[in-house]
Image (cartoon, rainbow, N blue to C red):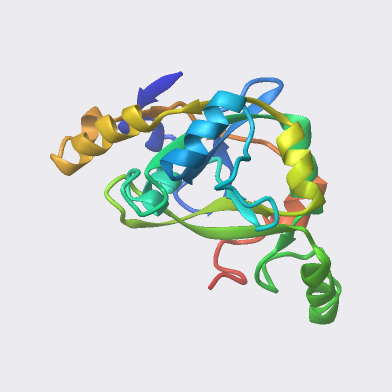
Length: 216
């Protein structure tokens, strides 16, 4: 489902840590950017893999469409020329959030001290980053956007949780052209609302803190 970005963004929180995403009762849509070889394999086989894809590296998953557009420069950055929309089981997504470790100490109250955080971060296969969200024009916002990095056994769980993969590059480029032409009010984006999580996840990821606390 698509909606005008200007209408959606008017209803989103201006600051704080929130997961803005498109989701159903059972799935959440996340985004990844790859080159055409990896993207083609993913669509054909409905999974990530192939000779050009590394299963041992950490892969980063983003549920926020606008933030993915900022990171990939609307599918123009090198090796990010194709945008994949990946429907993922919400049970897998929630489990990843619950086991993730924030990338900066002070961004979460889940750790007794910095030593405990360091130990968990070193051993964790799931990394959580809260980065400044951005507008369609690339302007930095006070609101934070989440990205989740997974590797090793959690990469396997992520792949098992994938329901559907779609290459949305053509749509991305159409909307990116509107932005380039200054027609931001006409831009359509996936309909995103706040993805609610459990209190345990909120504490784990520092979503219960003021946005300035522990931020870089």
